[in-house]
Amino acid sequence: MAHPTGKYADFEGLREQAVTLRRAGLSRRQIRDRLHVDNNDLLNRLLQGEPAPDWTRRPNAKDDLRAKARELRLQGWTYDRIQVELGCSKGSISLWVRDLPKPERKRTREEASAIAKRGWEATLRRREEERQQTKAAAASEIGTLTDRELFVIGVALYWAEGSKSKPYSRRERITFVNSDPDMITLFLRWLALLDVDPTTLRFAVQIHETADVAAAEAFWAHHAGIDTGSLMKTTLKKHNPLTNRKNTADSYRGCLRVDVRDGAELYRRIEGWWSGIVAHAQARLR
Image (cartoon, rainbow, N blue to C red; front, side, top):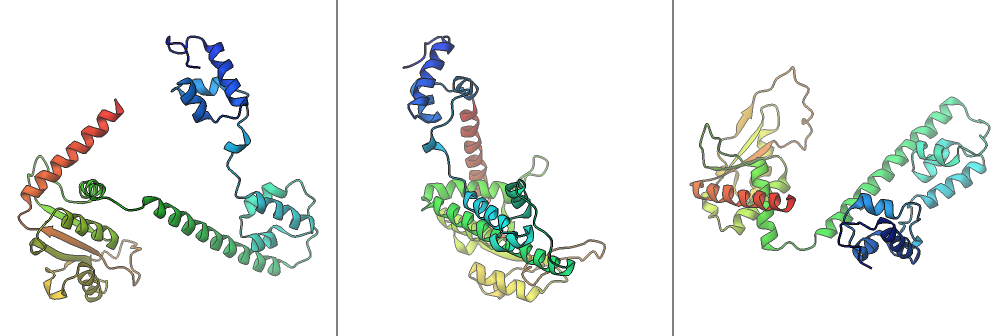
């Protein structure tokens, strides 16, 4: 069923084949592969007016919520009560039940306000549950990383977050600074993968002077697996009273700087590895 070699020359013939396959229950991907059509715009034209088979349609996770919302609305429930019960937004409820009769208001403004507040809290809880479910599902998709994958990730991580030499100031050294403990963990694991001697590593905390410096030093030393006495001198950032800093909670621990002594050779290799990654990406785009 392949199309003519003249780059989709016989459009009508190709459309007839595409429609036949669609009505036989094939998906867009199956039709694309069967007919060797790589152009999505052309594929859209070939299948115009032909509905997708039922098996390719993803179930709408909100179908059950919509049905339940309509059922409650018919019982005379307000948007606020439905929101509390189902944990979905009032905007969605409004779209689902706007064709149904509006119930008579039987509550005071204070009672309605209290219900609205509980409804919003229920919505926030539902959103957080969905957020955590999405994160957990995505995490499971990663599976087990190979050393090769970790190596490439580490190169990209350093080039994004680590210090880099400038044409006007050639400084080939390894310095990585981050406030995210997980980023520090990944970077240290990457250095271990490269067989970097742990004795060449130096650590220092960078934090605002108004924070709990001692607690931050203890946290980062523990995270890096060293004693606080092994930390280099902490860099204190001067507090500017005119700025509206958000990182003032107890969880604020500043940043940890990781240096690799005598790292010029490693820096050059990182620069080369990154060039190789970019060259591969550019080749795939051509």
